[in-house]
Structures are given as structure tokens and as C-alpha cells.
Amino acid sequence: MLPAVETDEQWDAIVPDEAVMRPGVEDLCGRLGLAGAPLTRFADGSQPVYAVGDEHVLKLFPAAAAADGLAEARVLAHLQGRLPVPTPRVRDFGTYENGWRYVLMSRLHGENLATVWERLSRPQRERVVTEVGETLAVLHSLDPAPLADVLGPGDWGAFVDRRTAGAVRWQRDKGLPGVWLEQIPDFLAATPLPRAPRPSLLHTEVMRQHFLADPADGPRLTGLFDFEPAMIGDPAYDFVGVGLFLTRGDPALLARLGRAYGRTFPPAELLAYTLLHVYSDLPWYMRELGVPGETSLPVLAEAWFGTA
Image 1 (cartoon, rainbow, N blue to C red):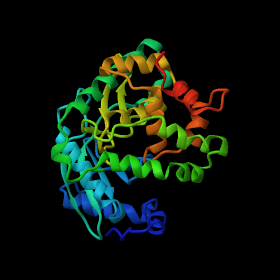
Image 2: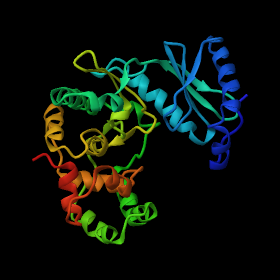
Image 3: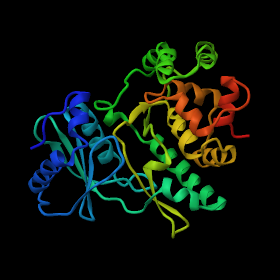
């Protein structure tokens, strides 16, 4: 019922089109014993995701992203009940037609933290980042070995080398001005990153948009989701999203989160991982967070990731 999606062109033509997607989703729900359940497509997310009634979420992955579907199912099963913040419970996962994969999971309840954030007082924000720090500490303490067959990158040092070799070209393609581009090689050379860190399970996109919260309860975090881009690697890599999209250049909040986590990381190290991140877009981050008056990567690192 769902057409094959193996190219960007097919993705653009098929995945956004509910007239094409919904009949296939309804058919799959019927096969999963959920025929007739109300379907509501979530507006956000890189993959098509549907609320199925009040208790289930169905996430679909076309052939072009089938490996991500397997990874998410395995990671969620591995995490079940092990983090301080709830994660979706896997109800079913497998293959559908034309290369599609699916994950049927429990539905988390709460309001997206990105929506809630502006309504929170300073003490409430401090409570939230404390919960995030505690959650990351547990996540990074879990043994990721059972997931090594579905999560990359494998050799962390080789991953860092590949990303370093292409960092200038990558940021140039994003539109980063030359005054910043010319600093990247020397900055990365002066910021050594571990080649064989303690392997940790990484979410890789620790941002407000991937948490749910109950604003009436403190607030209290009620969910952490979207593990499809999970990796195994250096724990510091997860703090790129933390600094850019959660604490957003607030040194006191990042310091509090670090205390809850158990350590902080040098700002230069976090900016280096920002440049090397698989989704890195430095010009976008600059538009979102602003830049200091001095055109300097070390100064930028302190502005975004400092805790003083």
C-alpha cells in the first residue's frame, strides 16, 4: 500500500502526501490489530509519525531510512524502564511493503518542552536541566555493547578523522563565511578529541524538542523520544545539542546541568564536536544563538559552551 521511497525525489513526492500515506498507514494499523483507531499525523519529525488513538504511536521508515527504523526499535527496547525520564515502549516493529519499516510504540504524554520553556520561571528551568543532566548520566552509563551491531560509527577515531577532513567543505556548503572557515583547520588541530573514548550510548540530539513535560507538576519531564539517530561514542558529543538547543548559551544552566551529570566538558571540545556533528550547520546556530563581537572560534566556544 505504501510506494517505494528510495531517493530524495521519491521522498519529496510521497512522504508529505497524506493522500498517499494514509491508506498505507491504515492498512498497516489493521495488520497490527488497530483497525479503526483514530490516526493523527504529527507535524514535526524527519520521519512520518502518527498517533494511533491515545495509547500508541506508529513511526514509519521508508527503504531509504530502513536502518534507522531498526536502530530506533532496538535502542528503545534496550532502554525500556532504565532512564529517570520515560521513553516509549516498543509494542511491535518489523517490515511492511516496498522496503518500509515501522515501530509501534507506546505514546508518551505531556507537552513538548520547546513549547513549555518560555512559560517556565528560572527555578523551573533549573529543575528541568537538572533532570536532563541526571538522565544523560544514566544513559551514558549503560552498556551499549548489545547495540553495536545496529549503531555506528564503530571506530570513533576514524569517524573523527573523516568528519575533520570534510569539516571546511561541509560548513562552506552551509554558507559559513570565509572569516570563520579559515579558522577551522587550526582550531580542530589545537583541540584534541579522544580517539578511543569510553563507549557510551548517545542520543545525539538532546534538545528541548525531544522532551515532554508536565507543566503542572513542577514541571516534571514526562518523556524523551526520537532515538533514530543514536550512536555509540564519546559522551561529550551529546552535549552539542545540550548547549545549542537546551541551555542555548546560558552558562549557569549548562553548569547546573553539568553538576547533575557529574562533569562538564571544555568549551573548545564541544565546539569542535559541533563542527564535526553529522547534522552540523554552524551558520544556522549563529543565527539562532548569535555570535560574540570577536570573530574567533575560541571566543565562540566560550559564548555557547562556557559555564563560568
